[in-house]
Amino acid sequence: MITLSGVHKSFGPNHVLRGVDLTIPKGQSMVIIGGSGTGKSVLLKCVLGLVAPDAGTISLEGQDVTRGDRDAFLARFGMLFQGGALFDSLRVWENVGFRLLRGAKAMPKDEARAVAIEKLRRVGLKPSVADLFPGELSGGMQKRVGLARAIAANPEVIFFDEPTTGLDPIMSGVINALIREIVVEIGSTAMAITHDMSSVRAIADQVAMLHDGVIRWTGPVAEMDAASDPYLQQFMHGRATGPIEGVR
Amino acid sequence: MIARTLAQIGRPVLAVLAAFGRVALFAADTIRHLLTPPFYGREFAIALLQIGWFSLPVVGLTAFFTGGALALQIYSGGARFSAEAVVPQIVAIGMARELGPVLGGLMVAARVASSIAAEIGTMKVTEQIDALVTLSTHPMKYLTVPRVLAATLAVPVLVAVGDSIGIGGGWLVGVTKLGFNSATYIQNTNDFLEFWDVGSGLVKGAVFGFIVALMGCYFGMNSGRGAQGVGAATKAAVVAASVMILAANYVLTGLFFTS
Image (cartoon, rainbow over all chains, first blue to last red; front, side, top):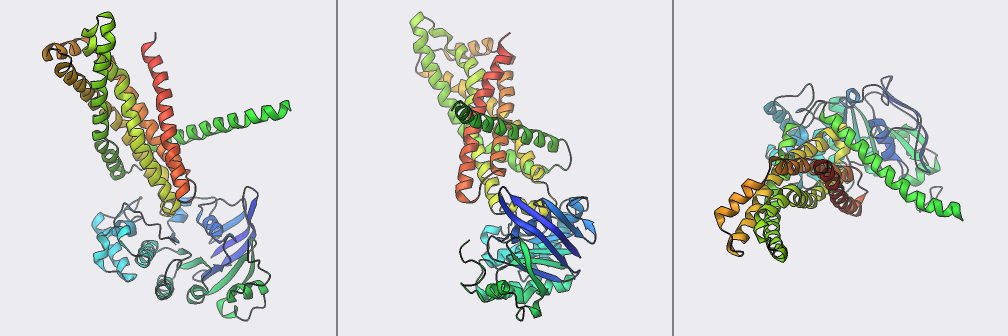
C-alpha cells in the first residue's frame, strides 16, 4: 500500500501540490487524472524520490520513502516514462536489462539478455528487436521496450507516466491492454497518471482527480460516471465550459 | 539612488560567485563519486575513445599548422636582431609549454565540452537521467565520473602528441622554407628542451581535460528544457571551458615558471 499524506511541493512562487492525501491499496491500479499543469508528474516524481516534497509523508507499506534507503525503495519500483526514456547509446536488450546488469545482484550478461528477451516477448516484441538501438524503433515499439524495462525486475510497484501520449488510438488500446494484463499478472501495485480517459477505463481499479494541487475526487473506476463532482464530470467529458478554466 | 546602484552592481557579482560555488560543489561531488564504488568501466572506455582517440585529428592538425606558423613568425621576428637560428628552440619551448596544451585544450573544449553538454542535456530533457535514477544508478557515477576521468587522462596524451606534431610542423617549415639543416634543427630541439618544459604542458593538459569534461557535464546536467535549453547549455559549456582553460593556464604558468 502506498500512502500520501499532506504532500506539498512548490517551485519558487508556484505552489504545485497543496496537501495531497491519497491511498493506493496493495495490488490495485490507481490512475490519477487531471489537466495539464495540475501537478500530476510532480506528484509521481515525489513518490519516486526524483523530487523531494516540501512537506508531508509518502510511505510504502508503512515505510517513509522520502527518508530511509532510497535505492532499496527504487529496487522495488518500475517506471514507464512518457517518452520511453530509453538510453540511445544502448541496445534494446541492454535497456531492458539495465537494472539486471548492475548493482549488488547483477546477473551474468547472457542471463540478463535471456531475461530481457523474455520480457520483450511478453510485451509483444520479437527477439530480433533486442539488438537494435532505440532510435531504430517506432514510438509504439519504444513504449513497449520501456514497459519491458519497467517490469524486468518484477517490481512491487509500477509507475506509468502518460503511457499512451503520442500513440495512435489503436496502439493506445494495445498498450493499455498490455499494461492491464501485466499488472494483474505480476500482482504489482500500479500508479499511473494520464489525461486520456480511455487509458483510465482500461487500466484503473481506482481513480483520483488532481486539481489545483489537491485530490478533488477519488473512488473506484466503476463509480466515476455516476460521480456528482462537477470538476470530474467536466474533465471526463472534455467540456470547454465548467468550473475548470480552459486557459491556465 | 546609491543603494539601487550598489544593488545593480552587486546582483551580477553575487550571481557570478554563486555560479562559481555551484561549479565547485559539482567538482567536489564528482571527485567524491570517483573515489567511491561502483565504477562504470564500459562507460569510461567509451569516453576515453570518444574524447581521446577521436580528438586526435583536430588536435594534430591544429598543432601542425601552429608549429609551422610559429617557425615562420620566429624566423621573421628573430631576423630583426639576427637571431634566426633560435627557431628550433623557440618552437619547441613554445609548443611544449604553451601552445600545445592551450590550443589542444581549446580544441578539445570546442569538440568535447559541446558534445558532452548536448548529450547529457538531451538525456535530461528526454527524462533519461530520471530513468537512470529510477534504475538505481547515480547519474554522477554513470555519466560524469567516466567522462571527467577519461578527459583528465586523455588530454595530456593528446598534448604530448600535439607537441610532437607541432614541433614536427616547425621542423618541416624550417627545413623546406627557411633553409635549416634537418639534423641541426632536430639536434637543437633535443638539446634545448628540458623535461619540465614537456612535463608542465602535460600537467596543464590534465587540468584542462578535467575542466573541459566538468563544464560539459555541469551544463548538461543543468540544461534548460527543450532544444533551446540544450543549445544554451552547449554554448555555455564551450565558453566556460575555454575561459577557464585560459585562466587556469595563466595561474599554472605562474606557479610553474615564476620563482
